[in-house]
Length: 106
Image 1 (cartoon, rainbow, N blue to C red):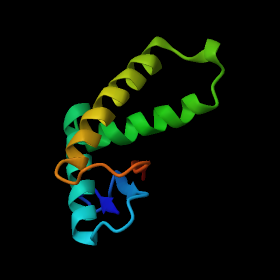
Image 2: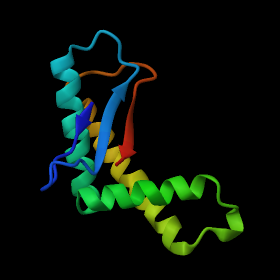
Image 3: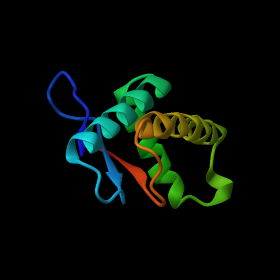
């Protein structure tokens, strides 16, 4: 699991590559690092990743009529950033059916 670095050594979020059996730990860590860096770069920084994750968590239980245009925009930015991050994370590994990156805020 990759934990992002911050000034106070408290990660803003962690990334884990899941369901990729047989992948050496070194390669897993490199993939998680590439994913995290690309995600942060796409969203404007680590704090913005954590903020977006919190917004997405709130959206999971929100009724459709309560979802704001700002929340929709954050979701769209997240999806674009997550696609770019997944592409970067999987670079050089080949595909493993069903694998995914899990991102959690701190």
